[in-house]
Image (cartoon, rainbow, N blue to C red; front, side, top):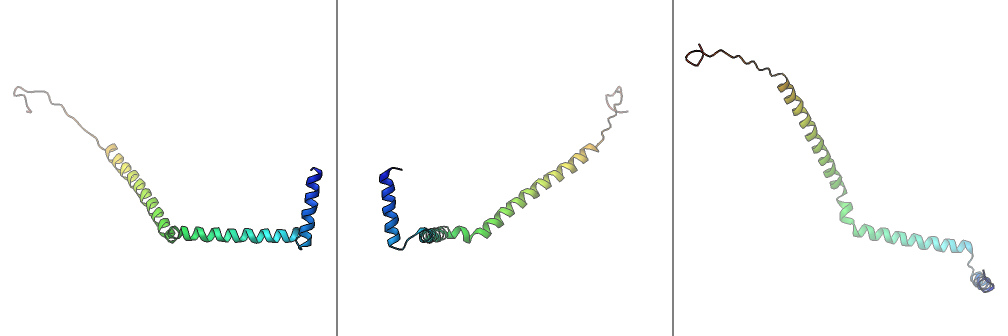
Length: 107
C-alpha cells in the first residue's frame, strides 16, 4: 500500500471509531442487511411462484402416475411377449405328403 492509502485508511478508521463503529458492529450491520435482502428475495420468490408451489402435490402425483403407467405398459408388453413366445414355441406342424393318384387327389 502506498502512503496515501495508509493515511486514508487511518482517517476512515478514526471516523468510524468516533461514531462507535468497529469490526463487530460492522459484522452485525452486514448480517442484518444480508438477512433483510434474503427475506425480501424469498418473499418475492414465493409471490412470483405461488401457483407453482400450490400445484406441487398435483405435479408430484402426475409424475408418479406417468411412471406407474409406463412401468405397467412395460410389464404388460413383456408378459404378452413371453406368453406369445411360449405359444409359438409349442406349436408343432405335421405335414403329410400323399403320392398323387390318377385322379390328382386323395385316394
